[in-house]
Length: 337
Image (tube, rainbow, N blue to C red; front, side):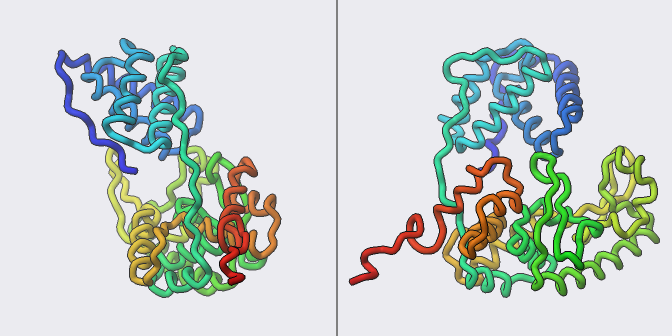
């Protein structure tokens, strides 16, 4: 669900903005110390900014649990965000006070994680997956094929590097996935020729970037120091480089990002409609389908848990609710009529 728009500044004199921005820099520094992902950092900072603006740009040091409860109530009642979105806002504000300010939030009525409703994931049949892939074009089609064939998340797919693909063993090594964990997943035979063709395209982009001194590596500073020659090393390059380059603000260095997630998301959405699929499918539906079809073919639940990278088997158990046909895989009595 999209984030609610920033509310208009309320009545009252604004607080010292320089002090507020210093606090945000402290919070960002604390996030980096704890090695939170870039997406988590941006999400948390976005909620903290909205919280500050909602209360008339007051300094969070001068506010506490009462103001937090008022903001969470606004999200639930006025903005009508989902339970998961409200929980993310609560986690961001808890981090602000606990780690950024050093004053953990007290337990008071009204501050508790919202209860999320249970849902059944959208799962495509193998026929629907075929129809979907026929409507797509590379490189988005290859991304969709990898998400279905290997159970990759969208971010894991578009950030793949050449060195993490093993054609001989028919496997892919997923680095620093959700929770900072690595794992190995199978590489489908059907994806091999498409992937080899994509690597030839990526190699041509890499040679062009070397001539034009474009940095397409996307490594953090620690890895750059550890592997100083990675920029010219083909093994470290991305499998799905972006079509365009950009100049980084502050450094003036021209860089090339990986294929953006929205490119694949838009392609999957449009192809679902073009294929006549009535389910509300998304990129994550391909990962759901990977897990469900594995279980249907007789794979062990623990094996599927490992391939998906779930920490708790209860997360994987949700796919048992969509096995075979009908609710919980039972045969409808109407079939005997």
